[in-house]
Length: 239
Image 1 (cartoon, rainbow, N blue to C red):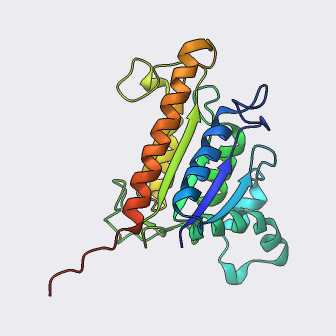
Image 2 (cartoon, rainbow, N blue to C red):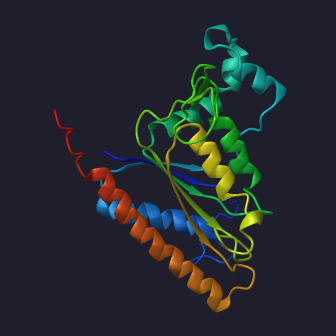
């Protein structure tokens, strides 16, 4: 059974296309989940709305607790890390992360950055061993990605007020959303990364409509490809 973590980071509560001032990223994530369920009705979906309820920010006390070995943590430390532990557990159990994240000022909104800071945890999702020299996704020595134990995918569904922020486009260097998310997730071992974005929000009209339709069509194709790759039995290795 496939497990999906569905996360929305937009503070807008509604969905574009059906509600005034609704969120485009919420529309995209719900479209992805809906399409997936048509192919896999038995899939388990865990939903978390960090746009409505942002995770706690890191603090001096949080850092002290996170870097204290589990056996030495006090009860207040464990209580302080309880939310982070729950967020980490959701990621560990997921096969696919479906992340709805708008671009705010060239990067992610604060709630999503807080989520990243809560799930990149020494001893939970990443470790350090000076003798470890072969990070499978990033050229980093010593860091052991603890989520590289099995294939996992992250699907980042974003929206942008402007346009031309994609790879190879004129404003790609100003896009600090997709690159930062890809780096953080690959750092902990999530090797599959896919991103789809809606652009032209500020100008609206036909350009926005075309971008939305393109994004929805791209999601449909990606769902089909991921579902096929995850349900096709692997060929046994020759003896």
